[in-house]
Image (cartoon, rainbow, N blue to C red; front, side):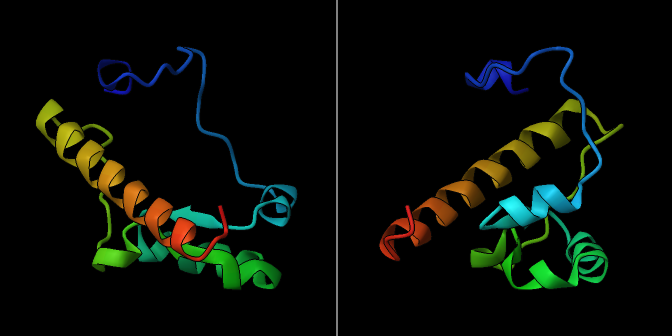
Length: 97
């Protein structure tokens, strides 16, 4: 899905476990579901103030499309793209980027 939308991702790239150095280095941590947000906030309480839903600006949780048909991946891709665009707009307006 990424390559068909112009985003090159190496075929050997895989998900990795989040670490305390990852969250410590980030100024913003975006997750797709409320449950993920709560997990990170509980595991890394010092960074809980910088963990938000990717779909925050539309009050949207984004389902993980793993093991789902291609149509689900397409829907999720659009939700992610739109949510990223929303964040970029918000962060730009706040002069954070």
